[in-house]
Structures are given as structure tokens and as C-alpha cells.
Picture (tube, rainbow over the protein chains, first blue to last red):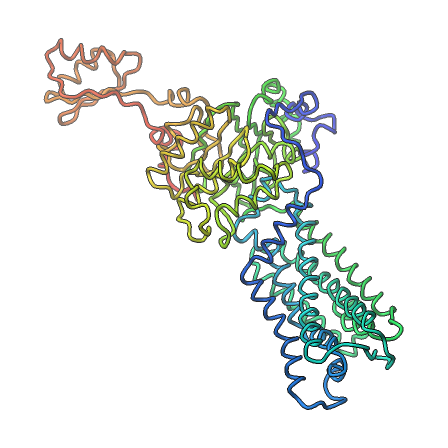
Length: 306
Length: 326
């Protein structure tokens, strides 16, 4: 007898009396409670857990240290035009570049690590402390659980990346001032346009990190050890960067999850160079879809024994 | 190949299965080669307090996990409150409060915040009444005073109480409580027994598992006994216990004479030891024994009718003690 027979017995016409009764009798519940169709309570509860947790608050603090460090050290050092990464040279001309410099330094490890910690914890963390079985018996449908968990991971990605940008922008503007911005093409754009471009670059990177978060959600369904899942996601992230730096593997590069991340600088060209960031967004969307579905395939009928 | 047999089995009882709060049919779970639960037909009538008994490792928790849809049976099927699982999980589980394999909460949240968390994921819960329901549940398990302490700081007994409170956040038709008295002191154990009684009085069906027979014996209307993955027996408690027979025990300084009187009355398996004689009553009324002894001038300093405890019953069913099964 196959699993399908067991769960769909009545539809086969040969089902047992046990199942036949489902069709002939209405449930005898006396305490039926109405279903609330649209509610953000679960998502808000998730965000409360993520942002209320000490460990994560400390992590947000560390993320903020980098832009502050950049702003302060550049302010204290003598200007040396042409030295350092792309955005560093421009910081003294417009403080907003602190945000971009901070993003470029944090995109290799710190921000992916933050997303890995949250996404690795998403299912494995609940399984590890046993709360997963209580969520499922409330009941929370497993698909809904994965959807809400991924929404929370995405929101965390956006908030964490925004946070780095915001601290960088505020510190940079305070120490170096704002005004007109010189784009990477050498042209001048107004302050409003400059802010918009930094915002677009930040959102672009947020979505890139969220695609790593989808990988993390999947890994998190494979284990009951949240730390293990987090380490696995960091390893995937670092491996992607390493593979991306091996010229002999150039055919693979454009498919790597991290390949298009550095393209966030294209928002600072004039006009904005949409080609690579569009590829980047499609790649991110592809990773999100594939790994969310993989997580679903893995989790939807997994035995929860933890 | 099992279809024909399965069908025949269920046809026989199909008329009543909907009246059971829990009805399983050949429920089986294999982990790799090991059969953890072997063709269990659990029947819990509505309104019953069903003691689900068995030593650690006998398959109780695995059965409960299958009942709640946490793990998928290898074979067999089951219904909760008349609805088939797991396809009706979304309809039936809101009516089921459960405690599965001990408490589990977020350690860095307070007891109250943990219950609010559970409530907030429940699509059936009314957020306007959350506070009242959470406090009501905490009060019912005697945890209101410690509600704002971090879960991490709770003792095992407090954690257990919080888990029971979590099962009581909403009115339930069925409560599935896996080892609810684990970690509780004798006072806490009494309170849980009392709570189970009051839930049953409210009309709920309670399925309570335990490896401590004496703990649940007093509150149950029905029992089922698990051993190495099989359900050995189940039914109303009086019926199950009737399997073992009552023995009369006479404390006397003339045990041989007492034994002779007992045999004369028709008791069987009569034995006489130092200062005591005993025999199986069978159909002999207990009150006749002392009268007969006194008439024959056998001095009686003590008289007890011993019904077999569930533990004795378990030994008689399995030929083994109530120990961990491997």
C-alpha cells in the first residue's frame, strides 16, 4: 500500500470505513473558531524574535562599526587621492561614499555572515530547542512556516544592509558633508539623486543577501544544529567568492550566487548601468525560487522528531 | 496486498469510529529496520481520560507524534475527533491541545512572552483576547506569579507547567499530554491529576501517557498498555484490570488453619507463610472470608483484599517488568 493510498484512500473508491466517514459526516466540533485569513501576527512575532535577541543586536552593532571606522580613519588620515578601494578616494568629496565603502567591505563576509546566522537558525534553531513541534501542532502549516521564515530572512537582509548604509551615510555626512556627488563616470549629480542611488544600491545588495538567505533556509531544514547550518552557509558564500576568482572557471562565474554582488557600484555610474544589476537581480530571484522550493521539498513531509 | 484485509477490518467497526476522539488503524512506524510502533489500533472514546501506559521506549511518544502529524506513519491511518489525519490537520489540530516529549520554549523569552508567541502563530486565535487567554492559562497551571521570569530561569517543574498552559490557550476538545508529570514534585503531580480531572469534567477527552503507572491509575477511565511497539491491551480500566484476579490475605498467628478455611471456602492458589495465609478469591465474596475464619475460631489480626496493581497486570501481560524496552 503506497503513501498515496494511505492519505487519499477515499478517492480511490476502495477506501476503508475510516475514511469514508469523512465524506458522510460533518466534523462534530463544538469549539470551531473562525480562521483569520490575513494576519501579519506570525511575521511580526518572527521579527520580534530576530531583532529582540541579544546575539542579533550585538551583530547589528558589529555591522555598524565598519562604516564608523571608515569615516573616522579617513577623517584622521591625510587625503591621498587614488589610494584604496574605489569609494574610499571619493569619501572626502561626499560623505555618502562612506555608506558605499562600508557596503563594499562588508559584502564579502560580515553581511553574508549576519544573513547566514539568521537563515541557518530559521528552522534548525526551532528544531534544536524543540519549539518546532509546538509550532506544527498549533497548527502552523509547513508551507506557511517556510513562507513566513523566508519573509523574515528577507526583511532582516534589508534591515541589516540598510543599517550599514544608514550609519555610513549619517557618519559620512556628519564628518565630510554632502552636496553634489561625482559619479564613477566623473559627472556631477544632485544630492537628492545621489541619495536615491545609494538607496537603490542598498536595496540591490539586500536582495542579493536574501538569495543567500534562501540557501540558508534550505540548509536549515537539513539539520537540527543551527550553528552547523550557519557555518555551511558561510562556507558556501566563501566558496562562491573563491570560485569566482579562478579564471579557468570563467564559464561558471555568472551562475555563482555572489558573482553580481559587486555590481552594486553600477548604480553610481551615469547613467545607471542596468545590465549587470539586472543579471544580478535575476540570479538572486533564481536562487530564491530554487532554494525555497528545495526547502519546501525537504521540509513538507519531513519527520519532526526533535 | 494489505488492502483487502484492512478493508474488512474497518467495515466491521466503521459505524462507531467517528465517535472516538482518537481512532488509529494499524498505525505503524519503522525507523530504518527498527519497528518503533507496530500495527497499533488505539481507540479513545470521547470524554474518556485514557491512560496510555508503557515503559520508556515502548513507542508511546512515537505514536503521539504520528497522531499529531509530526511524523508520517510507515503504514496505517488515523482519525482525530472523527476527522482523518493528516489531511484535516488544519481543521482538527486547533481543537487539540498537546504536550509532546517535554516542554520546549525560547529560553530568552519570559513564560508569558512564549505563550504569546504560540498564540500569535495560531491563525484561529483572536489577538484581542490573547492577554486574557494567556493569563488564564498561566493561572490554571499556577504559574501566573512567575509569568515574567525568563524561561531559562524556570525549574523543570515550571517548564512542564508552562507547556501544559500552552496546551490550554484555547478551549480544546482533545488534550494529548505526553508524560505531563515529568519533573514535577508530588504536589505538582497531584495538581496535574486534578487538572486532568477538571478538563475531563469540562467535557474534553484526555489522552495522557506515562511510564509511571501509579500516577495515572487514579484519574483514568480507560487505559492502553504499550510494550515494545505493540498495544497489548486497552479498554475501560475496570475491564482491563479484571484480567487479574483479587486475592484475599489474612494476617494471623495460625496461618495453616487459616489456609484450610480459605480452601474450604473455595479460594484457589492458597498458600500459607509465616503469619499470613492468602488465596485467590475467584467468585467467593470477600466479606464471607472473615466470617468463616471467626466461626472456625482462627484469630484474625489483619485482612486485606488485594487487587492486582497495573504494574502486576503489566508483568502478567508481558512476562517482564516495567522497564525500559530496547
